[in-house]
Length: 408
Image 1: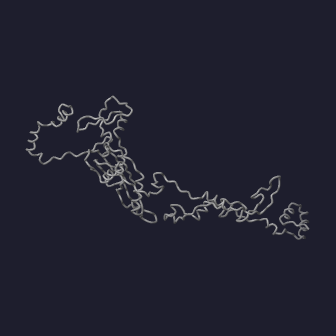
Image 2: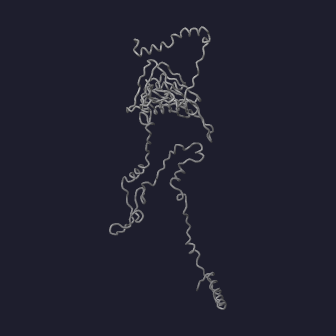
């Protein structure tokens, strides 16, 4: 019996002549149509899913799911220092076909199909060697063992990464200690402490640092330790004063410093006086203008001026001229420095003002002398007239002594 599907039967009948079409149609209707079993056709349709949680995500994404921080946790500040869970590749050191106690050999999967003279390898079950698991674990720990981070040399203390020893001979002073705050999205206004500390030994070494912390004492301790690690040397004139005048401006704070003779003392801002004591400066006049209450800018201006000072030898090497001092005490010029290479310029240097050179062309505005009440009296003017004949006698006496005309 011929089994023809209905669709194929209709196609064949439509292509024949009408007479033959009628005969075949009559014959086919008399036969019972047999269709193939539907089970055989359905067995060929296999359902498969090529996408799953383990195929569309990488290893890093899977680890972030179990060791990361949620969006709500990030807003609260969690996860800033990293997670305590380490990302470990658990497949490192694993081999296909190895179980806890045995290892299986599958030709073509984890072993060769043929070995030697085309000898076929058979599937086998072998016992594992002693210490093989420990070797694999050691291999895994080799890549994921915690390594101590290397610290910058300036961040190290007397003993490795700590600061256990004492700083003998150094003095630390707190220049500024205040509370600061900033606005956060979830915690509102968050307050903390800020400390500015200066450390020095009174012999030219000085260092400053600013540190912040949620508590006051840790902020001071961090600032002191950091300042002790940032020491810089300041070369002083006669170990008591600065070499020359200087002018520094930071922000809206301006500072002008002037060296003074021995015994003058420290006439300056209280923050500058504290820094000068830590450096070892004993005689100094300093004028602060603008934002005088900004302690960080005031300290920054003074330290910047100290570090940019030039000695007499540096000035002689830069200008190729002799550096000569004419002291009013002796009224005799004395050579302080000369060029190191010996190349001295012969042409004279006109209109050179040392103070204007170091002050960038600026001049300190000083108030005029106040008129005393007795200067308006007639008796005072009569006294000046009587002493007029003795004017300049003191200066001339010094000149005669310098010229060896008159005995010392």
